[in-house]
Length: 342
Image (cartoon, rainbow, N blue to C red; front, side, top):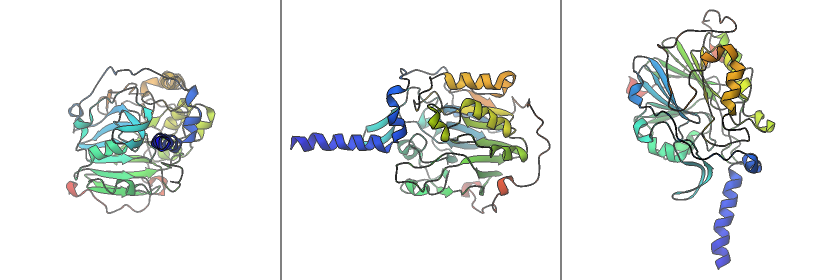
């Protein structure tokens, strides 16, 4: 009897850890083990004006974006630990060592949530349950929406690669190709992954989600200048991880390829996902950018960037005029519109 009482929970824990992804578990003994650290700045959503484009990095891949009054969260993760919930209050998985730069309560009621893929450190069910509201809509990659069907969001849409949704209030959201993988657990082979282009009033913001190096970002530049690129820079060591995560140098190269005026680096300094030292991603990124490092506009959690205060451009190559042709041969714009925007 005692063998069963002890053995079954132990077996569940081992299975749960294995489901998190054998790649990370395999190298766990060789990764940094930082102490919990604080952040130097917290922000409050009211600091971001409704008359501008502004954004703040909350941590990991979670960014708060205000597009002329449209409030958006990317891959919202506020949990102290992400992974598999065995019992209420007990989660086996990655521990957060840097806290979010804003409380979850302060960002409730956003208009839109963008989910790039279903990995446990990007689609965090406890955070999404807390954010679920009839006034909040969600856009996901393909074959992910069913994970959210029990949550009380106002609307959930899936976008295929290249598909655009006319969200309302002048905002168009397009799914852009990135190089990653989407399985939440080993058997979820059908789950999709994506990045997003947000276009409003002639301005473009790109959230790359999670990606390895891909030349597809050059197509973004062919359609005209991107105002700000939100780009991952961590989880690239050992080299095997670069099949699905770009190095800082590759992140910079893709940013330049896209013609982005500014870059916001994410996916670092929050969870330990890989072997590289904690501070290394930013150090390598700044070195790669060299004299153009001023284009990297957010370097710590809690910092805010505003378009109107930082519109200068310094590119290694001219961008050229904005073209009228559609990006990525976009599919016909969907008629799906935010009901609250009409």
